[in-house]
Image (tube, rainbow, N blue to C red):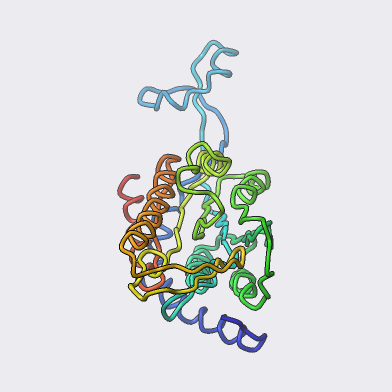
Length: 308
């Protein structure tokens, strides 16, 4: 998918129309109920009264005065939505009507417009082998569409023939943890083809970065996948290209052993990303280019609301 400037503008407009419809019909209510009023800010202390939650006792003030005092909080009605979107060359792949990058732009559009409806701020980190674009969180429809445009602009850039580096998702999350001043909703959208084999994810820098973000924020991880990355069709000898490194390789898809190994590696990666996410206390959402994802995310929000 390569877009000229005019094509890009038209595509962003189309995403806005489609995303607004989804956000208005089912998404905004689920988003608001799941996240609005979730956060709290310290306001003051007052004397303890029978029936107060003992977990709110301010032990420093209690020790200083000799009388029990509890902390008072006010709800944070304003939320920050931070989108961390993988725009590396591998996300340009898609075997159907949409590439992974296009699906990622739709996710950003729907979530961003739901945030706009709730008067929340939206920010973006678009990452490739390094951090590609950082858009500070702001309010408004035009700002949200600017974030979507930044994601799609990557599709128009030429992929270098060779580049030994891999997508630095861990570095992007570490930078994000440094700039977030208050609790936020962080949504990672990536295919997790980061150069790490599934068996290397546990204990990795990426795992530590995910855990750090999840400790301080609400975290959702959307794992982008395409059906042709999950299963090889029996098509004889084919040439495949690694979009990250531009390396070419011949694969004998007539071999059952080759097809089984391919499917096993794909399922191992999804399991590793799922374990990485849930182990950090975050929410995991598999997203496929050939399947509807909005309803699954709404159900994810509703499950969160039920737990609350």
